[in-house]
Image 1 (tube, one colour):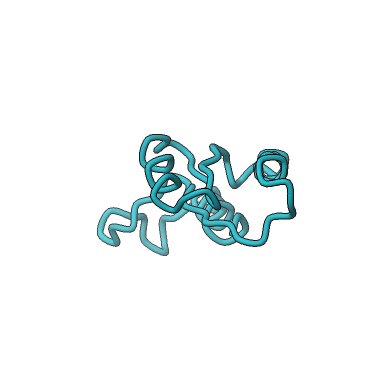
Image 2 (cartoon, rainbow, N blue to C red):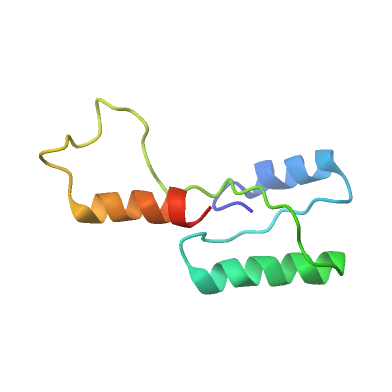
Length: 88
C-alpha cells in the first residue's frame, strides 16, 4: 500500500507483475486498513498473504532535527508508534 506516492507505487506493482497491486491507504486508520485488505482480496479473489507497507506516516529520521527526550511530546511519540509500529 502507499500513502502519497501513487506513481511510484503503481510503477513498483507493475514491475512485480500480476501478483501485485498498489492500493492507497492510511495505515493508522483501522477502517482504511480493512478496506485495503478488502480491495486486494476482491482484486485477487483469494485471501491476502503478503503486504508491503510503505505508507509510513510523515516522520523525519534526522536525529538532529527531532525533539530530544526532554522536549518530545506524547503526541509525537504516539504518531510515530501508530505510523510505524502499530500499523505494521
